[in-house]
Length: 568
Image: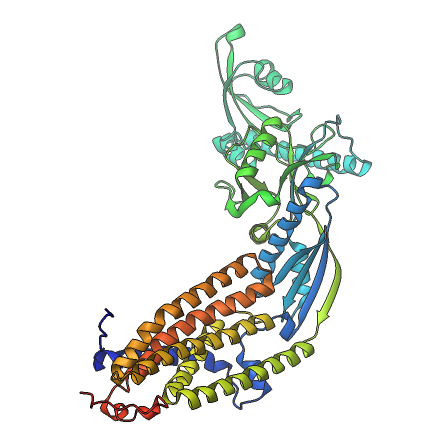
């Protein structure tokens, strides 16, 4: 037996109608600012559509070539895909909606930026995307400095020596050793403790330092001259001694001033390029953030690696304990820290001579994406909107003509049913364009094709409903019952067809290119909105006419003459 039809109360119908009108007005106010003062015409369509793709409004077509010469054959495809993903995130970050970024051949990338106003700025930002590399020293023996580097090192060496002498002079005037150590020491291991090194036996320090604390200085004394070692200039204070002979222990403190000479060169700009690439690069970067030294307040950039990067960084630091590991950005060393111990937490810090704005900019660039391999712009074309404008006008004209023909057919064949379908279709258009504006959606020709196709599907749902309602009317059912039966019997067919279409849209959006995705997304939005207008809007409109007036004029709904008793 067929399930009994429930007739909805007039109060509930008017409540639904009010809600529908509220939604329609809300969406209309979203769309209204884009409407011109005079319409129809081509200017109407050009202003009404919120965002247009490269094929409709013009833009830039860029072609890049990736340098894969240092990438193993089996990893080249992965590296190229990584570059594509990074560039796509990069151009999205500066406001280009739905860019087309795709690979071409073995080492080419194509970037299409629709409607962008400053092409040079876009190219600059894509090119600025940093190439982050971690390198370790090649085992080639002592590094030889150039004559220029030797001159710079000697000058820096003299400056450090004079600074150390000035600190000793201040200590001789009874200034606090601990306070000066916290202010001037460049030894991260003891600076925060006021230079305190604790008790140590012989063999714990370099020979120059041990000679000072075990042989030269008395308890409480401070070195008269800076003590030079491979680590720089030390200002040493012998704090305390205990034990004798082999058991002698000395507690000392020092202020270390770094030096730069033939033995210990710490300036990244003067380092010879004897660095070996590791497998760790920007593609392993998970995030970058600015942090500050709790003592000095100096900004630095904290790096967090992904799972693969964490393992790689642990291996690199393990084999380079007490050795430098260089962090290169765009081919230039920006930080060359000495590894103190194996780092297994998957984090690293870039510290250097930069201010807070530079640190923030570096973190932003790294977060936007570090390129796995370098790229070079080899082709740039500006695509004019004239061809797209013609295509847009012709497509909209064809769609408008088709829509008018469909509306005329619905009015002639379905009569009053058809009128309500047209009203529901108007609400469908307003809601759809509001969604396109709020998302926002970039419309290409393929996307517009998907939207126009969804209009046909919206009309198709109404056709199913009206035909079912007509059958009930022709079988002698009351108007109210016929309308409810029509919707109930048509719902399963509408649901099945629309769900099948949505599944197809999901597949196209997941596996398709950018153009195909535009078609799939536009079609999916149209299908969802059409289900709302066909089932909710049209149904509410028809429920409003469930009364004696229209029940006595069934010729407004069907061609067949139907006679039946008066409906109560």
